[in-house]
Length: 254
Ligand SMILES: NC(=O)c1ccc[n+]([C@@H]2O[C@H](COP(=O)([O-])OP(=O)(O)OC[C@H]3O[C@@H](n4cnc5c(N)ncnc54)[C@H](O)[C@@H]3O)[C@@H](O)[C@H]2O)c1
Image (cartoon, rainbow, N blue to C red; front, side):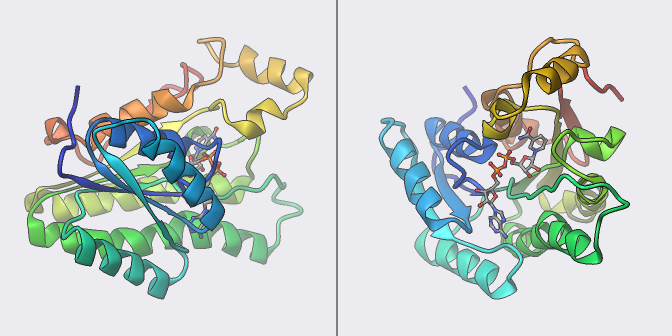
């Protein structure tokens, strides 16, 4: 088992009760980390922390409200962690928003809203955390892109979502080059359809259409995403950087 004893891991967007972030945070705590559950949703943070801390893991969860689009809020989060724990080993950029809309109907405000979280927010918190990782000469950044960055056409998203998630890939590859000599790796995962609440709410005919396009014949599980992220965030993945790993049951291969 990959171990994260004494490491501090931030997972943004981990306050969604049925989301991917909660499983990611739980997996890191299971493997010994102190996980900072960072979300804009305060009640969700509490729920995730209670869940994780009730599992009897060797690691633990600590919650902190953050709005990744607000620089002051991001700076406060980093200050809180550095004062309390003195280190940030891993940042998982999981917070993200989506909207189903065609380009024809999309407004500039729609575009700005999606980019403000998925791209600018990601930039803001990554910049703040990498500054601390550089001082320690160690760090791991793993960001959630999406299959829709590569092939377009999300069931839940629009072109602005695809563009923002493609931006995450380019941003990460560039940053990976900038900080590789500082012992910091920067990677992405690109999930396809994952078995979260929104998936369960889809009509049966749409579910069938989507599943027919997945060679594995099923959606992915949040644990399958979390396990890939934990590997990329481990000490063992020290020579992997600027990479993006597809987690999509074969629905897109590149
Ligand atoms: N679910 C899927 O099938 C799927 C597929 C590919 C990629 N992804 C990506 O994985 C990530 C998680 O997806 P999910 O389905 O679990 O999402 P989710 O909606 O369940 O969770 C997202 C979380 O982000 C938080 N958040 C939103 N704006 C924020 C902000 N400004 N600051 C801090 N937190 C904020 C929300 O409160 C929420 O808890 C997202 O980046 C998403 O784009 C999901």
